[in-house]
Amino acid sequence: MVENRTLGSSELLKALFPHSGHARILGFTGAPGAGKSTLVDQLAKHYRKHNKSIGIIAVDPSSPYTGGAILGDRIRMQDHFADAGMYIRSMATRGSLGGLARTTADVATVLDASGRDLVMIETVGVGQDEVDIVRLADVTIVILVPGMGDDVQSIKAGIMEIADIFVINKSDRDGAERVEKEIRALQSLAIRHDNWTPTIVKTVASEGKGIEDLASAISNYETYLQKENLALKRSIHNWQERLVEMLRDALLERVHEQIGDEAWARYAAEVAEHKRDPYTLMEEILGGMTGTARETPRPVGENKGLRDDITEKLLRTK
Image (cartoon, rainbow, N blue to C red; front, side, top):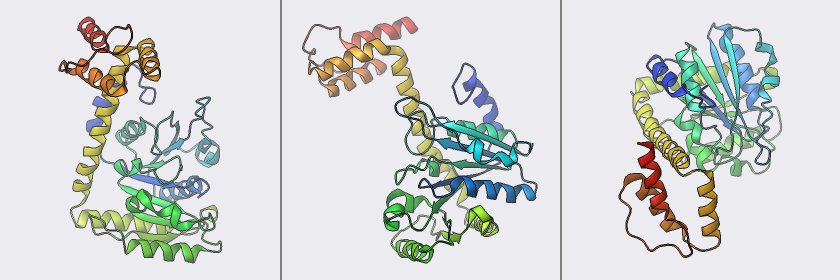
């Protein structure tokens, strides 16, 4: 219901939200082929040995042509299919950027409210701009592997700033030491608001090596957040960003509903044919939503004004 935003999902989330906030949310991101799924699988096994209940959300990319997604993590994590303490949900991005699907945060709320001790979120793994996870996870883990080309390229930009823990997976390969040195060199240039220096953990996830070290690093960072009273500050900052994102999605959805697909196609054609400019179009959309549209010249060509369309539909809705 929540993933598809079907009727009643909003009321469901309102009822569940007061029961959330107890699970620890771990975010895993990194380039394709870094071994995210294997690492998540092994870490989940580690926590299950300590009787922790786990929820896993694995986000897979959707095809821009067919809209389909493989959802391959259900195949990779078959060892847990009979474990009642483990719930795995694969999600498709459905065109959303930033590494997550639009409803990933809401699905995490559902799993949190269900009483799971940990919710582990594996992002798509699309590259350097995959930073949405930081607004959702309590601990963000960036996974790197040696021998995937320019290592500095893979860990610069936003990915460098969001990592609370770096994992060098497949560390039995040549080049692992060089990746570690490059991370440490970049850490000397990066300034974090919480003054935390991200831990670097080496793993060979396919063999289960380094998993306990990773669990220990996660625990150490959580202890640091509690000791420095940073957990609440981080949560407030993350919610500021998420609220803006939620408002953006809600407004966009409302505009789509009120205008309709046919009108959108007509306005797009008018802009493409240079019968009207897109900037005035945006002003009229916002003006129609708020009732404060400025007087603007009528577009070239014979068509009904967008502001009149929206006002008429708003009146009908009321």
